[in-house]
Length: 509
Image (cartoon, rainbow, N blue to C red; front, side):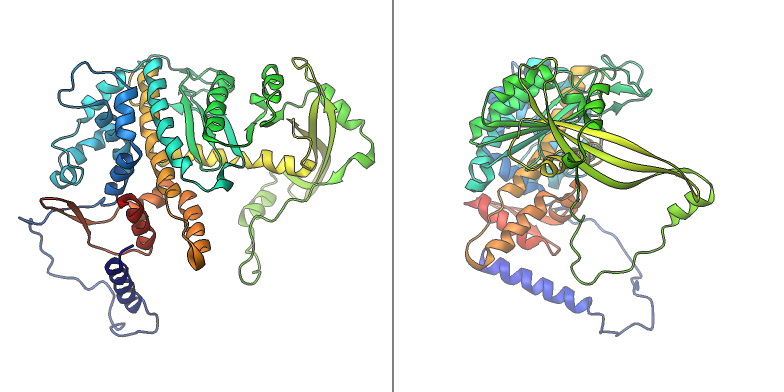
């Protein structure tokens, strides 16, 4: 970061802290909001945009060669009049990064002259043209586009420290994407009555990147096609240099016909949930008492100051008053045994959790029941409780799916066929991956700033999409075009601009 920028950030921070000083009580005799006689006018020379951070993403795409990779891998046009394939892909991703929630929001950016100047574009595709572009895709074209993203992803990973490559955690899950449409090709009704699609999402838990999305009709099972997608992601991670890969999924993904093949590679480990079949429950019930040990879960968070007394549980009081049935966990124990699934040629480690659950109704305790949860793995080294905790960590993918649905709005079905909606999901999910790459390229620093910079990097990587956009994209900027440079002049300050300018310095190198 340049010395001038550092000084300007400190000055803006100092001025704001003076205004927020709680001991400064000047003017408190009247309400704070005192603005009056407000007028509006249109600037003639100065132009600005509300999403000044979008320039860093375009600089990121250029630095990583994403634009060239898309145009080389994806060939959908015979003539480029006037748009290239990369123009359409980035148009959808940038729309999401600028807070767009649907195709129609592209029209706002398309009619913003300052936004077009900020990206050096004469014009960008309108919503109808963007929808027509999605309809050009078939499965082969979608795979080619995903491969272009992988080419870029490898460049980002190559700049990470050596510890980054210790182990890649690959998670997989399916999620329902509902639609109110009646004429969308490929849609179907799911088990719980939702009409729409059932895409499979494979992600890298280390960075929460989306490695693959496969769109399917709404009635398809979660695990359908998962093994083939996992194999593609395994090849990508091992080619990138990861020394080990851990596969995780719930009981729907314990595809026993593939376990021997994955186990044959010493670099691959897996932990899958397993259905509690009667024979497994019988084995667990016959285990001796000495085989079980108490499962002690770590605290959800560390108290930074002093423990505080919890507030009254309003929900629990209502449940008791209205005599609702309640399941209360009283304890967990863990054990293990060897087990060979029918489709496998060898035994694997089966870790079982026994939960003691009490059923209550109001103030009455009705009865106790035992429930078993099974996990199959080829990890013979880790402790049994570590296997359970690692399997439970996969639940963070539910948060990722929530971000893809409600954050960048990638898991939607705005077009009219299965393949076109698949393409829309992949292109819009690029906004989420760009966020991850933005964070991964933050420098970790040296010397006394190393730990601070590393903590900032992990914090940005874990941000929700909306919070990230507000902190690093929604930056009011004046756009100044000169003969040799395109200048984004920030017009406001927020506490995260020091992190922002550290990335700007990296992109300028």
